[in-house]
Length: 122
Image (cartoon, rainbow, N blue to C red; front, top):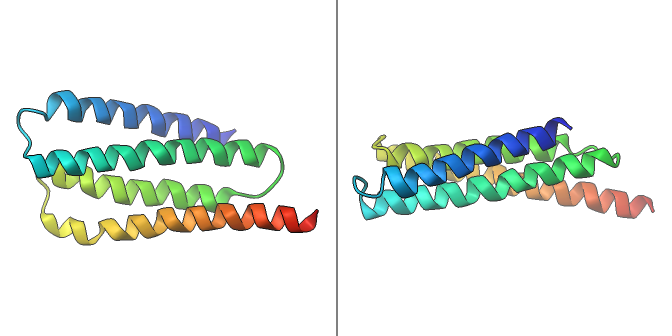
């Protein structure tokens, strides 16, 4: 249940941040900053759903917490650095963003590995 709750909270935050970007930043942010914000929001919300999915899989037994942690930390780093840059943080944060992307990719690999392991067990 904790992963479903975490995904729901992450989704709530993602929708709020998306709305803030669409309405609060629209007139003050550059086109590049708005692009960062939109990308951050997209990845944030997709991985909120992935966290809910991890929670649903977890209800049926497989241990998927490592995938959940990778999704949560990866989306925090990936989206967080883009949100920060869109708000004026130093652009060197862009060098950190791919680390979040690696975390997200790791989450998908771990989730797939868990599914494969379950299939192989029969």
